[in-house]
Image (cartoon, rainbow, N blue to C red; front, top):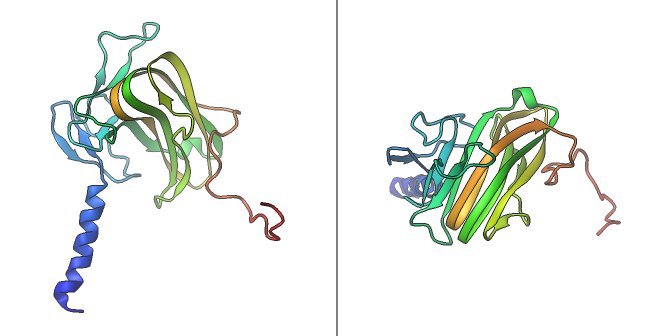
Length: 211
């Protein structure tokens, strides 16, 4: 293999990786490359303090705090499609250290309202270790929100193992419409997890007796 051909592989890999990194949209309209998972980075000019707003296509969504819609007098964040189509995805999320939540079962919940033209939305929660290995993940698969609906509380519940490094939670949307989010809570719970563990504690079905 020549030196020229050897250079093509890493270059192609870099291009592929960059294509899958979401863009973050700042309040001033500037778009920058999103940080990798587990970086803990928060853009100082994010539309909502403490939250990262990202879109998988340029200018797919607008993000902000509504001055018209409230939930029981509580402020609401909104995600509104601008040029989104059925394949466009967006997210409002935040990431933080898992230190004080280790060995606990945590519930992320929020009250959500939707006016959907063609939109699907879901609360998401992810637990990863310091090496960026996924330890727990739930995106409300099979329980996602669709259509137009009034305020209702939704939740995801995951265990946070001892080796956890970071937790990310938020709401993701896909397609056209608008969604409002309010009364976000993150608390310890005894509720059953809403997604199965990614790694069992011990091997199972070694004799192939179960199907």
